[in-house]
Every structure is written in structure tokens, then in C-alpha cells.
Amino acid sequence: MTEIRRGIFNVLPKLEVLDIRGNKIYNIDDQAFANMPVLRHLNLNGNEMEYWKREWFTNTSSIVTVKFVKNHLRSIPPLAFADFKIIQNIYFDDNQITTIQRDAFKGVKFLFSLGLSNNRLTVLSEAMFPNNIKIDVFDISGNELNYIPSKVLKKLTTTKTYLEGNPWKCQCLNQISFWLDLTGGNS
Image 1 (tube, one colour):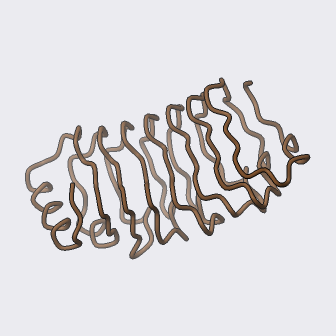
Image 2: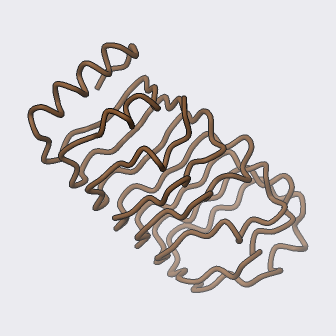
Image 3: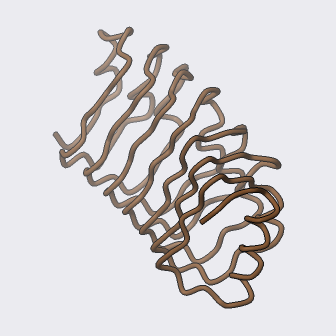
């Protein structure tokens, strides 16, 4: 399978889990996952997607978990998850993400897990996160990060943060350690 066309799932309005991992999907039409009111878990791991679009999900707001691990994603757009009112898990590990746009996580207040490991991130910007977001497990290991601005740390509360495999500068590590102590998290 290489593409997901609009309307293909119209005959499955009660579909809760959609697992189409390990294909060669590179294109998804706008509204391909539209009008799926009970879709909760979407797994597109191991495909060839280069981008993420919120337009795929018109009137589909019950998503709890999205998995796009081992694709070729390059960025996360603004308001990527704004329509997902109960999202809890986002896995974008092992992609080629260099940019997370302003307001990418706007509307998200809590996540059990945010996986961004093994990408090409060089910067985490305060503009991509809403104020007071809580993330239980935040994995940014294996990127190209050497610093996290204090404004980002003030917005986030995490329980467990994975940091290894980044070229951190010593001053930043001290700041991250202080932040984890202050918020009760660990790494």
C-alpha cells in the first residue's frame, strides 16, 4: 500500500484502531481519516511519510494515540493536534524532524508520552508548547540539541525525560538538572 485515499474508511465509522504500519505509504489525502468519531489509535509506523497534516482528521477528535515512528517526517506543523481533545500519546521517533512549528502542540494540556527521539532537532522553541503542559514521558534523546531555553523549561512539567545522545553544553545540563529537581522529574 502506498497511498490512503479520501473516503476509503467511510464504510467503517465505528473503527477504533487503525494499524497500517510497515507499508510504503507516502501520501495521505486530506480528510482520509475524516468523520471517524470513535477512532482512538492510529499506527502508521514504518512507512514513508514526509509530512503530517491535521487536515487528514476533519471531524475525528477522539484520537488518543498517534504513532508515526520510522517514517521520513521533516517537521510538525502549527496546530497539529489542536482538534484532538483527548490525545495522550504522540510518537514521532526515528524520523528526520528538524522543525517543530510555532503552536504545534497548542490545545494539548497533558500527554502520557511524547516521543521525538532520533530526529534532527537542533532547537526546542518556547513557541511550540502551550503554557503549563504536562508530559509524563518526554523523549528527546538522539537529536542534535545542545541547549534548551529556560522559557521552554518554564512551560513544561515532565515526570521522566530522556536526554541522552545529544551534544549538550555543560551550562545547559546544569539548567536542565535544576529544572528537573524543581518540577520533581528525573532523567
